[in-house]
Image: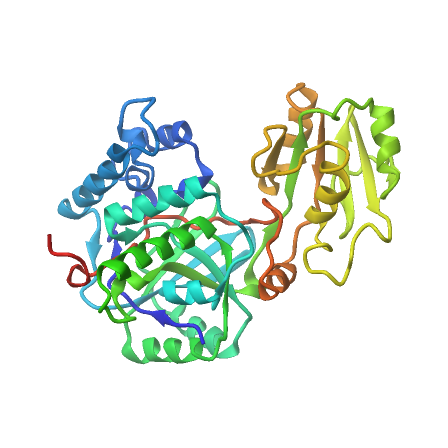
Length: 418
C-alpha cells in the first residue's frame, strides 16, 4: 500500500504568480538569474540560491546551501511564506490548452521509496543527487515536489471532483501560458478518505524527479542513523510530492541532436542505417507512430522505420524507441555509448518543437537530429514494474510543476536540538 500523509505546508497567501517558479533543474544559473531579476519574491532565490551570490560561485559550495537557508528564513520572517496551523492535503491543477491535470499534494514515504513501493525508472547522477541532498539537509525541507503517478481510481476522482467545487486559494497564469490552480484540503473527512484510498494503491511511480526522490531518501537515511530510535512516521522520513492519475498525464517527445557522423559521409551513414531501418526521404519531421523516427540532416527530413528483429517487443526496455535508437544508431554507428555523459549528443524536449532541431543543425552546431515518437505512460509503468531502467531522457512531461506553491519542512522535534 502507498502511504500519503497530510502536512503543515509552508506556502504563500498572496503574490502566487511572483513567487512560483519553474523546477530548479530546467533552468541554468544565468536563466534563473534573468528570470528572478527585479523580483525579490521569486522562489528561485531558495531553489537556485547561487543567483544571489557573485557570478562564478561554485554551484556546490557550502555558501550556496547557506544562502538557500538564509533566503528561506527571510521569506518566513517577512511573511512571504507562512506555515499552516494544521496538517492538510492540497490539490494542484494545471491547465495547458484544453487539458487539465489534477494532482494531490502530499508527503510520501522515503522508506517506501527505499522498498520500491515508490518505483523509479531512471538512473541518477551522483553529483546532482548530492546537490539536492545538501539542499534538503540545509533547509530541513523538500522544496521542489516530486512528480508521481498512479493508475486511475474512481474513488479518488470523486474526491478530487468535490474539492474542485470549492474556492481555490489561488489561480494564475504563468508566463508560459499554463494556468495553475491550488486548493487547501483541510476537512478531516476528506483527509481520511484520501488516506484510505491510497491504502488500496499498491505502488506509486516516479514520473519526474528522480534526483529529488533520491536526495530525500539520502537525507532520511542520514537522520535515521543519527536517531536510531526514531519512529517510522518521523517527519524526515517523508518528502514532498504531487500525485496524478496516469490517464491525465501528457508525455511529449524527447529528441536527440548529434555533433557528427563519426567519420562517415552522409551516403555511408544512410547505407549503414539500412541494416536495421527502412530509410525514406519523406519530408516528415515527426514520426507518426511507434518504432518510426524522424532524421534531419543536409536540409532534408528522412523517416526511419525499425525493421523486425531490431528490437524485442516482449522486453519492456528493448521495445522503447529511445532504446532502439541507442542500440542500433547512437552506439554502433556514432560511437555514443553513454548518452548521459557523451558531449557529442544533446537532448531537446518536444515543447520546443522540431524547428529547434532544424535550427541547430542548419546553423552548423550539430550534424543531425532525430525526432522521436513519445514514450507512453504505459511503457513507463511496465519498465518500473519490471524494476528495469529506461535510457536517459526517455520522457518529457508537460506541463512542469511550479515550485514555491507549498513546501514540506521537517518538524524540529524530530531533529537535533543543537
